[in-house]
Image 1 (cartoon, one colour):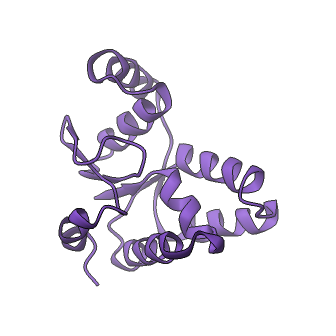
Image 2 (cartoon, one colour):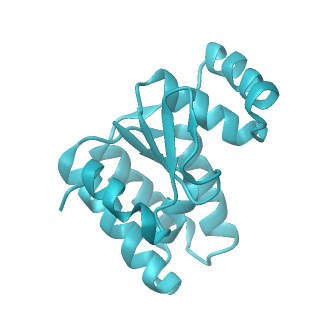
Length: 148
């Protein structure tokens, strides 16, 4: 299973983001078609906040993106045990708190690949590999997880 960090969702929705928009939208489209993706409520919340405050997307349009994606992919909430794991992730892995909570939630749900521009690229944290979708060297690995 895979999951997308909110930054990739933002690029997928932001038509002014050029090549990153096209690439992110393509990856999300593949994930929805293949049904091998779990999203987190946290990522959707962060997405909505960023695109309505910084990307100039109207709240109704942002909500439509979330509605479309959540209809196509299961959405997981963070749990109290995820919070404990996140706090450990801050201590042991040097993650920021919100990144640690995202990692803890996807780890619990069996995600093996987290697609994110913000985490250290190619890092593997307790079974969750992080890949930057915009780094050309990662294209072959992402193509395995999200074939065309």
